[in-house]
Length: 358
Ligand SMILES: C[S@@+](CC[C@H](N)C(=O)[O-])C[C@H]1O[C@@H](n2cnc3c(N)ncnc32)[C@H](O)[C@@H]1O
Image (tube, rainbow, N blue to C red; front, side, top):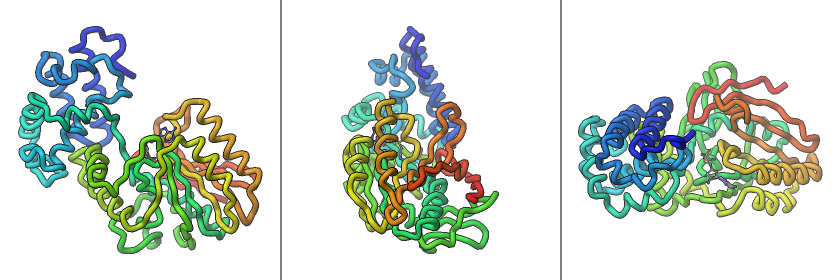
């Protein structure tokens, strides 16, 4: 999708905002959806948002300039640099009053601070902790079947929050997995059947890579990550904040690297008496065909060398390439290279349809 084909820059920018209005609305941010609607009208009228984003009016949906701008505005509020906006955004304990938010945004856009202009230079970067609820069943199946500690490698890890999946609490009816007192909790997301929660699972090591990693031990980058969580999504905001706090206590290195080269390097290292788990979520669609091929080849090569004392698993939460309606949890296990569909999951956080594994 994109605004390509719309030649009038005002109409093109308005169209971009209308596409994001649909996205924000569908993904549970009525406040940002309402702001996108208003920005669309303002762009058509050639108002301040048009002056601000005119150089990017011909950009595509994927370039995400409206989200860059909204993230930058949210960031100002989170940083304490926009007290009036903070006073009205739910993420900063504000009242969520739409007209007041609109007025505060307008004031900032009319004379944009340097930090807001800077936000336009960066694509939005998120790390969705809710995806661990979809992935946990896969980690449990691997632990159950191998009975070995896990060496966990995540590609496209962003801030690496999901590398701490074993530090979150998952519950369905009377069963559960993870620290009982964890501040990141997923209760009741398996109404149609649960994964094997009652399994000993030990993470021996955790490491990730991303072409553009976020280091949440840096206060500035922590705010950057939070700024892309939509401000009226209080639960998601609190979950991300709690996961960032857990990350400070449970270290994991996130290397700045391309997934294929990094995986080749790490899978070349032997891992006896551990189950190596390569995992990823909602990143496959961003890879070019050469990178996808290279990753598959590296996995096949390492899989061919895998043994029952040094097994390899490839766990992923990704939509099928011909069906983006929801992501599937798939697991390929070596030795053998058997592929299984484990669950229908969720792009953010939602019910997981667990499939029987036998
Ligand atoms: C939509 S985000 C998902 C992040 C994280 N996996 C999650 O589920 O929250 C996609 C991530 O993939 C990363 N990425 C894209 N291409 C990559 C590549 N070739 N190698 C490593 N990371 C890549 C991006 O920088 C981004 O952090």
